[in-house]
Structure formats: C-alpha cells, structure tokens
Image (tube, rainbow, N blue to C red; front, side, top):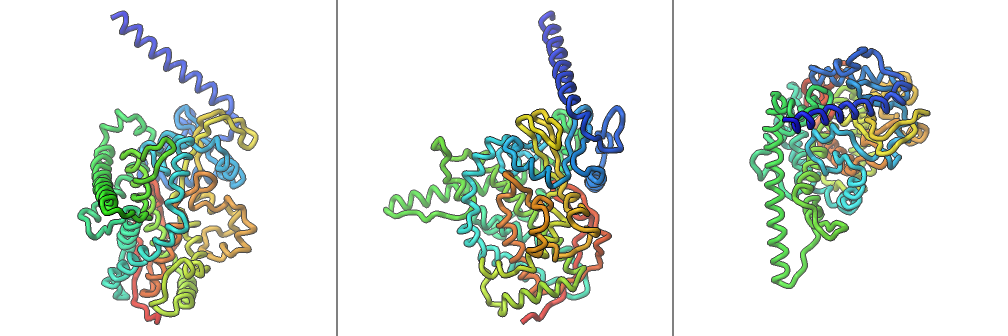
Length: 502
C-alpha cells in the first residue's frame, strides 16, 4: 500500500512539475505576443472550438486570423498556439531547418510515416530524398496518357447528364476520375476492375471529416476519452475499410513483382523498371540496405492516394464552378483549348499542356480562392526568433492559406474577385513569393504539385471540349467546411450542355 501511495505521489509531483515548467517557459515569451481577441480569461480560446461542426470551425479559424497581421496567439487552455499570417514570416519559418517538424495533432491522421504527416523533421528529410524520384519529369511524362484515358472516361460518364437543363453535382464525377488516376499511377491498377471503389471514396471523405473536427476540438485530444465517442466509432469503421482496401492491393502487387522477378531470373532476362509509385517504393533500398517495411509502404501509399484524390477532385470541381459563374473566362479558356488542340485527336502531352497558359492562370486563381488544404501546422525543434520574439522549442505554429490569399495588401482592394490576370508573369514577379501557397512552400512543400497541375489541366481540357458549363450558384453564396481539406457546403452544382467545339 505504501509503495502505491508513493508511486501516486511521484506521479502527482511529476505532473505538477511538468505543468509549472511549461507554464513558466510559455509565459517567458507568449505573454509578449498579441493575443487574438476575443478570449476567455480562464479557458482561453478552447471553448470557442468545442462542440462546433466542420462549417463553424472553418468560419471561426477565418475570423480569428482576420485579427492577425503578422503573428498572434491563441490559448488552447494553458498552451499557446502561434498564428502566423504575413508572407515575410511564413517564408522565414518554412525555410528554417528547425521548423521541419509537425505538431502532435498530425498523428490523428494515422499515417505516422507518410510524407504529409511525418512529425519528425529528420525522418521526413530521409524519406523525401528517397521518394523524390517517384515524381520526376520522366515519371510525370509517362503518367500523362494514363491521366488522359481516365479524363476521357469521365466525360463519357458526364454525357448522360448533359441535357442543358438539370444541375448535377460534379464532385462525385471528378472524384471517381481522380481516384482512377491516382490508383492507376500509384498502384498500376484500374479502379473499375475492383469492388468497393465508391465505398472507398465515401469512407475516405468520412475519415477526413472526423480528423478535421478532432484537431480543432480539444475535448477529443485524449485518446481514452475519444474512444468512447461516436466520432471515434465512425472514424474506426471507415478507416479500417480504407486501410484494408489499400493493404490488399499492396500485398497483391508484392506477390506479382516477386513472381515477375522469379520468372525473369528463370528465363535469364531482366525486368523493366516500373514507374508507378507502389512498384518504386516496394523496390527502393534505404541507406541501411533494407526495403521499406509494410507499415511505412502503406502509410506513404495511403497518404499519396488520399492527398492526390481529394485535392485534385475538389480543385477541378471548384474550377468548373468558377468558369460556370463567369462565362467570359470560360470563353477564354475554350478559345485557348481550341488553339492548342485544333483537332479532337491532337495529343495531350507535356508540350501541349505547357501551352495552356491562360488555363493555368484560371487554375491558379481557383487555388488562390479555394486552397484545398487551407490550414497547416509546424513545430520548431530548436529555439528560434520570430518577428523579434524569442520562441522556445516545440511550440505550435499554424498557417492559414485561405486568409493569406485574401490579404488586401498583396491581392488588391477586392481580393474576393475571381481574376486570373493576377497570375500573369509580370504580376507574379511583383508579388511576394510566399503570398500564394496552394501547395505549401519551403522545404516541406507538396511533392505532388506538378502531378496535380497536369491532372487538373487534362481534366479541364476534356470537360470543356465536350461541355458548356452553367450554374445557379453565385460566388458570394459559397460556404466552406473543414475536413482537413476545404469542402463546399452543398453540391458543386453545374449544368452541362453539349458543346460542338470541332
């Protein structure tokens, strides 16, 4: 009994010491940084987040950042969270090796070694170096015809809805296309040949929503408490399905590669190097001479699939909405497509995609107004100086690209206006390079940004070659919710009318 009491006393003293130590460290610097208003005297800002749905959470984060010009802080209970909102400071932080790491809440995504969620900066650097060749120019060039085949299939499906009268939610159609693209290019398999495709998309959406709400609800941080919630049960069911779906493909592909290698050895031949992501990561040798273990392969693969599918399907859906809202811009894109592709048989390749300059401007303006990943976080592994403040190690630093892309001092007096001319070369040259970060920036920028732009251009070309876009939605009516990515509240509703382009 005495040992138990002594142990409990030790735990209490240790906990109090940790709290007091951290409280003193935080207050040495945090009290000097402006606190975002409003704030509760006892609970800080934590109470504002608790119990909110994904739409309310999105609006709250935008509202809080509206009060931050350079750097401010939130109090999540006794813990400060730094909100950084100026391009000068963002550039400084994103290019500091000390700020490679990511905060604890990235572990809620459940992909501990994925490039997207890897919390430890040192481990991330090693993995990024190994995986960079999987998105090389040669690989991306080989992916173009695969992407085009998926995009052509998508517009054939869309044709059934092209009556020129009824509105259709375009997101499920683009999501099916991007999922087929990402599975074809990352795993070398065709999604229409597998059962469970639609359930996978739905499950992935539910997982992202559960994670997004958990990150901004402090009452769900403690794992033992979270496990008793309805959100956890929904999270687990959908996550288990997604993991099982991708893990089955990994095991099947490992067996196929082993069989092919054995056949090549038996016949005295050599096996051609496959370019898809899964085959490459299965055969990458690490510095210690070993291959990636199954768990790391699954994490990397699941991360690429989730990021590549969700971000691209949302981005092309937002682009179609904006072009439907603004027919003058749609006409300019169509005219450029007709010039670059004078025949429906003109090949889609890296050269023709590069010529789509105005189309790229439209896509970039869409990503400015609707950055698919609007909020990200970082930790500093060592002490740093930020805007004159001395920041101790392992502080939580957050960026809001949705707000950054709407700063009037960088985007003019009407930043909400859809204007692709903002991305003319001369305008880009004059603007701060870190005022626009749809794919993040610095050392931990998105490894798949060129892949994403290729897929978006190809899908937009094939859609506009076949259909004229209209919508009853107005830009002022667009509302967003947060599920890791920024989702529109309501359908991406457009009317498709058959276009006679050629």
